[in-house]
Length: 272
Image (cartoon, helix red, strand yellow):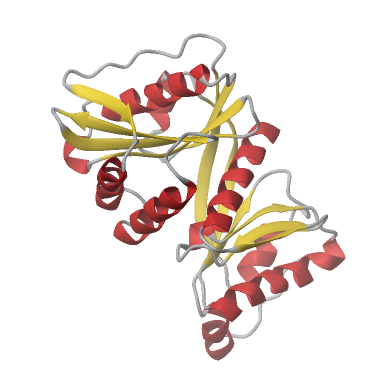
């Protein structure tokens, strides 16, 4: 569990910083805010606060979002404290965005080969490659074009020369149809992110193929463990590639302006 949380935390914090956001990182809470227009990426990623301080910390997070006019989220994992954070967040206008399985695979064995006829998976080396990567994301991932535009802008700022990041583009008979990104942190753990297959190319094994390619890329970089968060669509695919579920994130989401709507339309809710 610690490997997953550490990789996801570093991934969100780095993308937020490169996007121009700021962090809070202390003994109580870790968050990134202001680096993205996407609520998922303005996020609380760690929390270990006492029960008598929990509501105050949540209100500080709400204040950060409201001052900036941003949507935001709280990526709740089993290690966070206190244990009643869900009830406290719901009482303050957050909405339950559901659960995201966190999965881990052992890379010490050779990752499986998942070949698809006519599919070539290559690193993103050029701006043209990155544009193609963004086009695939825009057509089938998350919040569509707004998220794809922000993600590719951040990756352009980071640079395409390697380091802790490697982006992959899958082309079927020359046409871009799939994406994946590998983020290494710490040195032996690789997070696999932004796995996407264009809707018209789904159910052909392409998602499995590009994920397997990301796993091989991670192994070649000396990683012994791969981690990822799964959508319902990808869960069975990842299991067949050797990933096992270790826990589930609970995503609590807050839209921009939620405080104003809550104040005008309902009375405060108290839970225990």
